Image 1 (tube, rainbow, N blue to C red):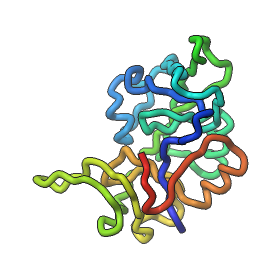
Image 2 (cartoon, one colour):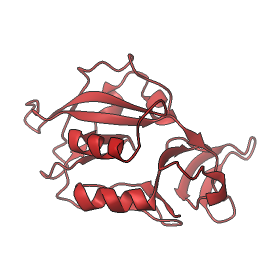
Image 3 (tube, rainbow, N blue to C red):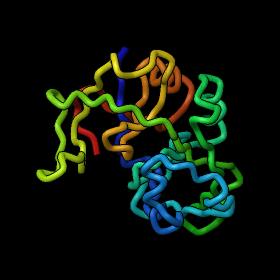
Length: 190
């Protein structure tokens, strides 16, 4: 089984969010995969950036590395077993470029399970010289034997900002949803 990493979609037509870190209290907790239910109000609002295109997808592109999905994408993920105590779906409001709230509902998907599975020999990353703690990852190769067979979506334990998705799930989601952009093992990602 192969694993992929969510990355920025290079398609200029895709709508883009840039204001997530400004509108989420304790934003760092969101990128660390900490339980946030109750601390992010349902009235949390993000506005589509003028810099992005006009094509709003099921997987909403953003510069923060946060997984934001439509109701349709949430339902597809839940059907695939991306549900339960290891995931949070936090409702948010999106506004168009003119500041009008969209009627459709969107969600931050917050995977809570972290798996230390980075192949340090084949991945490209930066680490602290003093502590060897991972500071960033540019290319990821997953050690498959470290990942429980039933796990389809999780955070990289060494650097939880990275969300990893199994290849079979990618294929099924891409067949029915828009905007899902991932890179494969050893490919550069942002």
